[in-house]
Length: 340
Image (cartoon, rainbow, N blue to C red; front, top):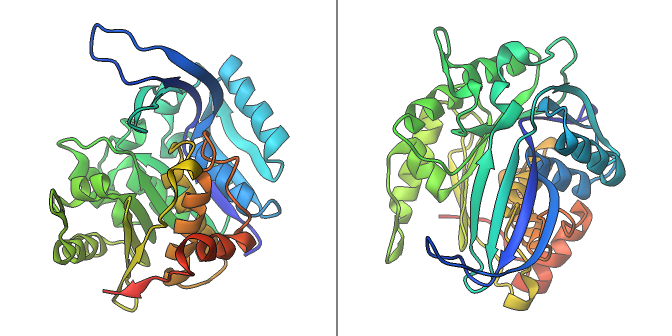
């Protein structure tokens, strides 16, 4: 636990627009507030830094050689000094996302430009310098070069994860909620070289082709099938699905299925949902980095995600790891992940 966590993925500029309501096509909605912040892989990086400002953190991939790229570098240096950007390649136009936060529904809509991040692939990463304890690959299904086919490993993402394992790192993988006809194949190839996978319900259904969310709620027998399917695809240690009301997990080595409710937060506590899934992943990965069990990882993921909801940008309000149990006690009476 000395070399920290490496995050491979696009640092994206998030341009937030709070609007009265999301407009129908051809109609007007007033913007009530705007803000700009680091997003994409930067959300999980920032959340990890907030959890522990002393742990070694590294980002690798592509950063734009433009105003947005310079903004991201300044943001990291100012707010997250334990994050190293030395393994980034700087070129082209940086990725950015327009995020529309609807005040009436509390839902978000995203418009994204892939930019220079599209070029991230195994051959473009500085493997002669990369090293750590855990290697997180962000974001499968985003249409980056790493989703492309590879003659030996199926996809370039799978080759990246295999390469990371060769360098002695545990591997983790994250997706974007962009289901498509190739989603199951891309996930299957990558999961064969992943130790940890934590995704939401949309991504889990896309990866496995198994539906488990219905109007009447969640079919937990189908949840077990989905978790088992991802294990059978090759995920070697932890498989986790995080959802608005519950989180589910499978400890592959013990075969134990786990379930934990999310926190019942008052609406006045919630200022934004951007980055909540990334904060969950950060809490889970930090727990794994410390060598602790999956039930604690799910609990800390829920707590980190909940703390992120108190802010607009998803990272500013993430609590230090040592304070997360207090948040669980405050809103949930110290809930724990239990078998199901």
